[in-house]
Image (cartoon, rainbow, N blue to C red; front, side):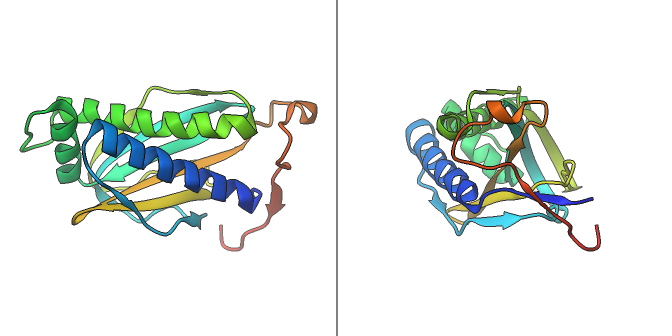
Length: 187
């Protein structure tokens, strides 16, 4: 399978939108300060991890996925700040809170991207929780990944978008070209 690479300036736009959105949601909704790390572009699926992942689909002229990944402990801390109560263990309320936090972050990223890429819709968040879990998409597009830290906790927000091939070229928004298909060895 071939990885489709998009214009590098789109990765920069996505990373800035992720950083801005995440900081805004954390400061206004969670009363927490969170610091972004160095943005990176990944084409390989992440290694197995334990914790929680919130996945949200994006659809329109460009489509893809946004996700938020963190430990169960950090999800409990976020839920506690969001809902003004405490959580010792992951439960349904923590699932719901993480889904809503991811929805706000990815929704704000979507709004920022729509200025360049055209209108997009969001799916309902899907939350996955467990040990040694690994999420994997079609594996044909690069992900824009921004790590964050809040005290000792780490969180990753990542987005992968590509032109929706069902849209005609004449419907593509100005500013970005269709992806260049570059063969990747060993896939």
